[in-house]
Length: 271
Ligand code: HPA
Image (cartoon, rainbow, N blue to C red):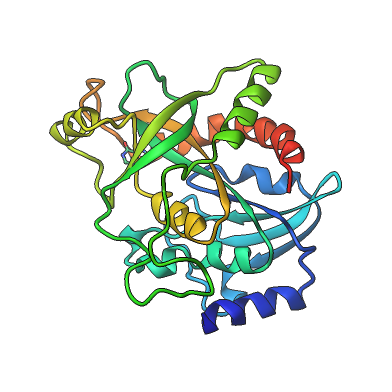
């Protein structure tokens, strides 16, 4: 908690505009941050205790600014368990932002598509998750100031925000499908057998991020909307190998649509 408050204090010194909404952007999806006006960009190394990004495609800065009148925080670049960080480090940023007053987190991530009705480049709303990362940020003594020992996860992905996102997408002329996200630890992509297993247990998407942050946000009573970009079809679905280049390239292709969606959606979210 001490570290969280130290980081919060530093950010307050930098006049961050008290955002109620934060957007967390994953691989190749960083474009949204440049849409904000009155931007203050804070590279992660300037924030005490903030974990540094190491993955290609993750810029590693916190951006505060405005979408019209709305104050927004954007975490451009996030850290993952596969980089060697602990679950607590992975959720550090989300916890600091919640202490600053953020009550709604919009997370965007890259994912492999398991459901064969998805196509590469689709944006899919995450409706629920299966945490296969073998870890949660809540292990250890509970920080009562953050939330309860045994938080409920039955509506981890806010149904009202999902309805609003779907409606907004329809108005923009595209459809947002929904799916269950299996969070794995990576960094290797899955084997075809693992993908068949994930499909059998009810997963539509697979990715290496998101679930830790979603657990931490729910623990604190914050609302979550998560949007996965299907950067590739999961292993064994198509007769081709998966590369990180494909993942980044598709993320960049889909980023334009994601930016449109976020620009229309965020002002409609009630604080
Ligand atoms: N598997 C796991 N994580 C991913 C994938 C994938 O196929 N694509 C993007 N992130």
